[in-house]
Amino acid sequence: MKLNRNFKNLKENYLFAEVSKRVDAYKAEFPNSDIISLGIGDVTIPLSQKAVEACKDSAIAMSTKSGFKGYGPYDGYDFLKNAIVDYYKKRGVKIEADEVFVTDGAKNGIGNFLDLFDAGNTVMIPDPVYPAYVDANVLAGHKVVYVDATKENKFLAMPPKRGKADIIYICSPNNPTGAAYTKDQLKEWVDFALDKQAVILYDAAYEAYINGKTAARSIFEVTGARDCAVEFCSFSKMAGFTGVRCGWTVIPMSSPLNRMWLHRQAIKFNGTSYVVQRMAESMLKEGFDDSLKMVEAYKKNAKIITDKFDALGIEYTGGEHAPYIWFNCGIDSWQFFDYMLKKARIVCTPGSGFGRNGNGWIRLTSFNSKERTEEAVSRFVPFWKEFVEVRNKLFTVVN
Image (tube, rainbow, N blue to C red):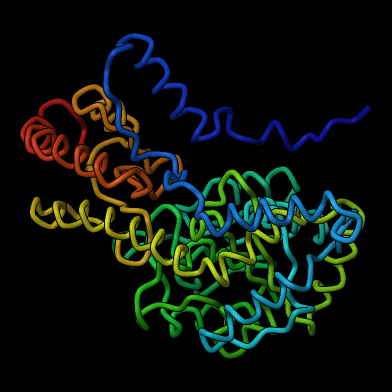
């Protein structure tokens, strides 16, 4: 038996597992402490009643002879695929139903998509970025190269002047930095990918949070993207489906990856649950206003945080187009994590867990309740003022 030798190339501790480990250790030492989590990006608002009604109705239908469904289509039911097509159409983006593949979430879709590529590709990934991209490619045996996202480019990595790439990852709005690309910036990436004959894997899981016309919500808004890009989306953060699991992938029909992905799904995937797909459909139709309200609630939480950061003069990105606020703490990220947990009982996510360029930075999320977000901010203000006073005395400043 030969095991996957690439496992030895993974980091020992996955970022969010390490966060949980440290929080659990603190709770064990201080069991009565009131900890507020602005760390791991899970949602807190309950499911829309429209989604629950769709769940009930479809489950009851499954108990009848006429409404029963067995195995569904590998690429998803037409009712949801067409609803997704209409969702894009309302934003001025034309896609076809045969280009839509329903999945059990964007994370699974992006990770499983690597099945379509031979080992040994050169994969270009921004730094910092969601660590699952890197780990999935390490396991697949690809060569990972990084392109820098820093405060100098407002944490929006742009194509390098030189360098090879076969696969390019772009996340916009970005996790962890909350930064979002404009159409002009994405056009540079599209032109770069076409020149390198590379494919862009575009993670748009947070597109519903984008404000106005200053940032792109889909890479297919960009001329040429249909010749080089695949887009992954999710109901997790727009409809609270983190525990329900449903997403979709858009692959242009002109791409050989379209038929390859259908073939792969037929081999390894029996389709997303009929009941879940009916729930997802409801959030694009009769429950769409509930989706908008959910997103707006999290965006208001983000503004509670960023308004206070503005008042304190803290350097940050995000918040406007994303449920993430990425701020400069100026010291080792894990040291800040431990210090804020101890002094303010607030959980954050250390930026260094997202890449080398993340050290000295911290990610906060707006996914808690309004009340808990306000409480966290009320704790943060005196904590930060004290931290600034002692930072140079107790810690080594990194940027």
